[in-house]
Image 1 (spheres, helix red, strand yellow):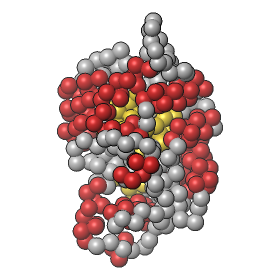
Image 2: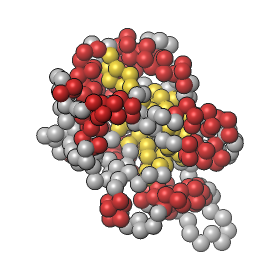
Image 3: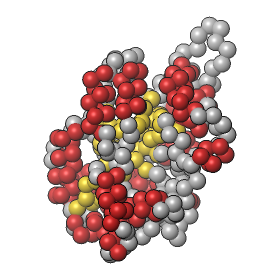
Image 4: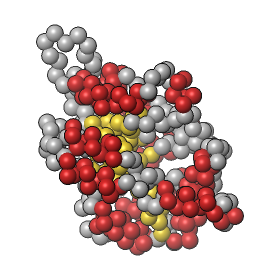
Length: 329
């Protein structure tokens, strides 16, 4: 059975606070562990009122400390915002606290706007340095060499699986060349998914870290007792994307009964394109949708995400999705 995992952004809903988002995050992680999800990843974003996962490594520690078995990691850390040494120290610390449970996914985008990127004190176009920064970071996890002037403490000699994340061919090509596992952001940027996956598998070079290619594909999944209910729950995600495109990102909105009255035709077309990798409906429909996605794209793992306003409904969606997937195996 292809493993299922969770991608979370610690969403802050209208009327809620980041503190409530963190409580819901930990509650979902504990349930995901119980239901059999393999890993629970959090993603770095900045200056987004509806996303509270800016201090990603802090939240990873909180989730890992509140669970016992599930792998916890970054999906991902936006490396242009950080020095490789600091990231190695943070994740060396996490892996020392929670051995065998920490993943480090790395992204090339800043995860924010230019003004915020400058406020993060990254004054150069460090995305161009991404391959070199990844190499530097990997070296910090290797055993210390004689005469090595700079070392990660903790970090050196600690096993931390490193993934490259992407929504284009760049990271697929780099993951293959470096022999690293790869995760594609098909949940919001599906256009290059099949080409990126084929390129990664074709050009993969085995490394000390990974002998054979391993690719995760992400997708939006909304499961409930009925298709109509799931479609209504999904309007939260649809509204959030439109608000972002309108330049008015805010907290996560409640669902609406009539999404057609909310958006313009061109907005609808844009959202349907970016959210094309979505499975929703009742348990049978979700099981069929997951199976069809897996059969068509053949990922090694699928990472589910769900931007659902009501926490109980969000929990239920992840529970039903796993039940529907397990029922087919």
